[in-house]
Length: 392
Ligand SMILES: Cc1ncc(COP(=O)(O)O)c(C=O)c1O
Image: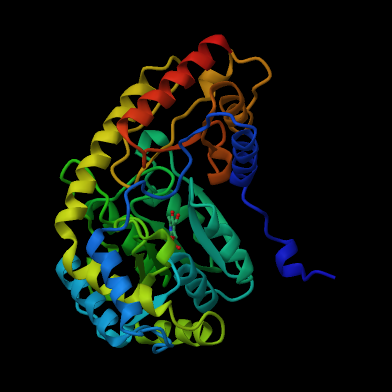
C-alpha cells in the first residue's frame, strides 16, 4: 500500500501540457516552448569554471550539512549588499534548491491542522508542501486589477486562530507582481499583530524591471525580520537551475530545525555547486544586469503582443519572467475550448506553442507564458498563437 501522505497531494497539471508537448516533439512537430521555468541563458562562464576547478582540486567530498562556511559567508555578504541586513553565517542554511528550502521551512513551522495563507495565483508547489506538513492552505485571491498583489483587508479576513504562516512570493511566479515598501508594510503589520511567520520566497528578487528596487519584507524592522524566513537561491538570476542551490536566512531556532531535517534527508548541497555559487555571488553583478535588460525587453515585447489580441487582458509584470494573461473573454468564441486547460491544449495542437494553463496556479481561464526565450521566439510564438486563434 502507498502511504496516505502522497495520496493527498496531486501531480502538477503542468505535466499534462509537458507530456503532450513531448509527444508532439517526438512525432517531429516543431513545438515552440513558452512554458519554461528557467532562463535560456547559460550559467555565467566564470561560474562554470569555478565548478570545473573544484573538480580538478578534488573538492568532491561532503561539506558541512548546512553548507561550506565560505559559501554561507558569501551569502551573508550578499544579503548585506542587497538588503543592508546582518545575519551570522550560522543563520544561513544552504539546501539543494529553494524548493528544498521551502519544504524544510514548511516542515519546521507547520504543525498538523495549522492554516497557511497562500496568496492566489500561487506557485504550484506551495499548497502541496503545506499539505505534506499536515497544514491547510488557505487561498486568498489577488486580483489582476490590484496588480495581483495581496490586499491587506483580504489577508486580515483570512486570518483565524489557527493561522501560523503567510507565504509571500515577491516577485511572484506566475504573476510577476512585486511589492513596494508601502505595500508590504500593512501586510507585515498584520503578521506581527497575529503572530504569523512570513515565508518570503525571494527567488526572483534580482529580476525586477523598470529600475524597480527590490524591498525584502525582512527589512521592515527587527520584529518583522525575526518572524521572516527569507528564501532565495542561484537558479533564476544566475541561470543555475541544474546546480541545485537554494538558501534560507532566518532566526537561529528556525535554521536549526531546518538543518536537522536536512541532515537526515538530503545532507549538504553538491560540493562542486557550492564552489560555483561562491563565484556567482561574488563576481557576476554586471552579467546579471545585462540579463535583466534582456528580460525587460522580452517582457515589453510579450505584453505588447498579448495586449494586441482581441479579448485578452494582460497586466505588465514587475519582475520574474512570466506573464499571466486573462483569456476568459477570448474563450467565448472558441469552439470546444472552455477553460485555460483546454486553451493550452488547443494552442499546443493548433499553434505548436506550449504554455501552462492558469488553472495550475489557481488562475482559471488564464495562461502562463514564460518570456525566458529570445524576442524572436516570442514574436514567432505570438504570431502562431494569433493565427490559431483567428482560425479557431
Ligand atoms: C516561486 C518559486 N520558488 C522556488 C522555486 C524553486 O527553485 P529552485 O528549487 O530551482 O531553487 C521556483 C522554481 O521554479 C519558483 O518559481
